[in-house]
Image (tube, rainbow, N blue to C red; front, side):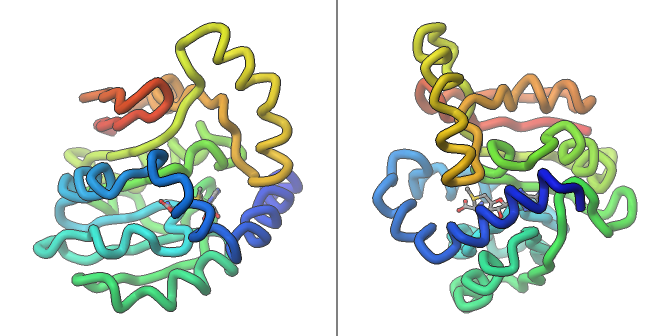
Length: 204
Ligand SMILES: C[S@@+](CC[C@H](N)C(=O)[O-])C[C@H]1O[C@@H](n2cnc3c(N)ncnc32)[C@H](O)[C@@H]1O
């Protein structure tokens, strides 16, 4: 793991203890209905990248073949382990870097991410890895916050980004839709939930 990844990972380890109360206070960022919608699209063998504290477990739909959920933060995984009972399908938790996954090519039917690609240190590398492990007819489904398209607000986001990166290990000015395309995916759908939240479906 490179130095930058180690540094951002340490921030996520630190964040793990107060991540759930923090997200509870920011309900508009990821709404329950959006989590439901995200996981309703999961089919077959599912990979959740950046599982965090396991906030999405209740939304894993019955009928899928099971979920493999990865995170590079052992502290986040510790929290997730205590919530495994909330899932109705079998979940395998693994400590793994999204930028360098240990899975064979074409292993999964669906890859899901929720507020992860704001923080993966090299997002294009991580997205290339996701493309590699997806089956050719598989789908990437994402719920991610991005840089505002409002130029003034976008510039404010650029300006304050270092503060967010230092405290939370998260960039608020990522252009994730463009990054998905740059990694070679074909965008099937982009839905704007509001100025910064995007629901993205892409094919490898
Ligand atoms: C903002 S949290 C989102 C957690 C969860 N998806 C949710 O909806 O609550 C981002 C998560 O991505 C993980 N993450 C960031 N970069 C990663 C990487 N390169 N490999 C694996 N996990 C990563 C962090 O450790 C953190 O748990």
